Image: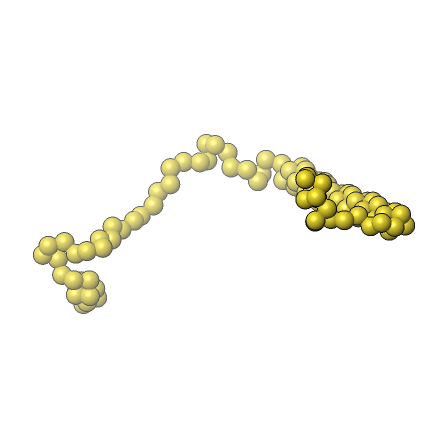
Length: 104
């Protein structure tokens, strides 16, 4: 029963020459995939090596000049303004407030 299910999807060719061609084609596809994978791997490793060399040269040339010392870091002093989405009771609407501020 299991053999019949398999044969309805794939029936191997009867000719030995055709079978040999299929085997050689399969080996060729596998070999091509392997070689292309090696090229992609070589390109990725080359880019990683170039990046590592660039970072090493940058670190050697800049030394510690490109980094911020911990004592130079400190709290950030900023200014901010609170913006209310809805006017509170007794406050003029947004347009009226802007006109009043521009008149002053």
